[in-house]
Image (cartoon, rainbow, N blue to C red; front, side, top):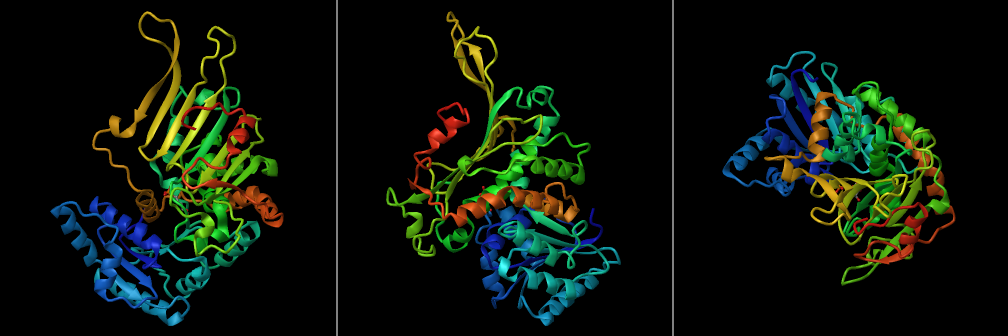
Length: 482
Ligand code: BG6
């Protein structure tokens, strides 16, 4: 827990992440009275903005629906300021330090109360020079220093290790580094631990004895529009699978942690990740979208290199080498420019042994992460009335119908608050990331070395035509929704 006051410095304040997420979420926390009483927010970037330009920039994605909101936003802006400075000059970081110290002094913060949270909303190219500038000139010795960092954490195992060993002397892994994977801040992903470990109804069924397959799916109905430059260097696997979806998978599949604290949970996740078998090339289907329905293809994006073979879609099957999951395929799918936007987990159960109800559909448990958060179970019921037919129906927990005044925080709100409070349960530890890269690196290198050409799929569709056969191979039962 943080004692006293806090200065939050958002580095890269004029970038996409800062304007779309960091500032709106800091404001969101303030609006709900969740920020500490003594708080100071600094946007830091290279551009020379006037106060007016800065305010315009950071409020462009903030909605203020009522007079009350507008008043709150004005208050928020009173303790939020902009500093323009270099990313590679000691002087600049000393000035930043001076600014923070002045505020700490003005607010009569005592030793132990002068906390600093550095949020790096920065591209990897300037990452280390900023971290070292902060280390040399902007750290406090009279409170906590916390460094919040975002992907990309390298591009493969080797570059990840390099990045980590460069960072290690600057900020302490155990006390100071907070690696964000924003999927861990999503309500439904946080709920998985409760669902699994607080319910007799699910806990005994959670294994290959009862489960036939697990699908983890992320679809987006938009392309890389404008982000082609970044995306082409990474591809869909590094963009959302090695991190977001693998984190989701590790929460779904891990053994029961001995306690609900950060290290106990992350110990289990690491153990799980280390049990994942290397992905075989035949368990990988790649796609790339083409122009359709007036929408441009991936290669039409001017920021994308000509003839790029970067995948914008991938389906991967994982197997986990432990007793719980022996032979159960975890099928991960992610794609840009698809027919819809949604993130969901679909767990298909085995058929009940015996044939009293022939052809009864399989049970399914679906966790819909977004949009419209829900958990629902598909089960067989007697068709009500004179018929004895067996009918597939749903037990449906759609959040907005069940919980009145539902307020689901943005993932970044939830994680920023955790970082301020020092709760690391939903941040990624170094050994987790290392294990994640170990799973993906051989596959990624193989794809790149062999220049595997992705299958084309038209913008706005369900992915490559080969997908359906791919899913069949893992015994996935087709339903209208998967
Ligand atoms: C980001 C990826 O990390 O996650 C994006 O870089 C992707 O390409 C995004 O669109 C998805 O996050 P969300 O919260 O919108 O599902």
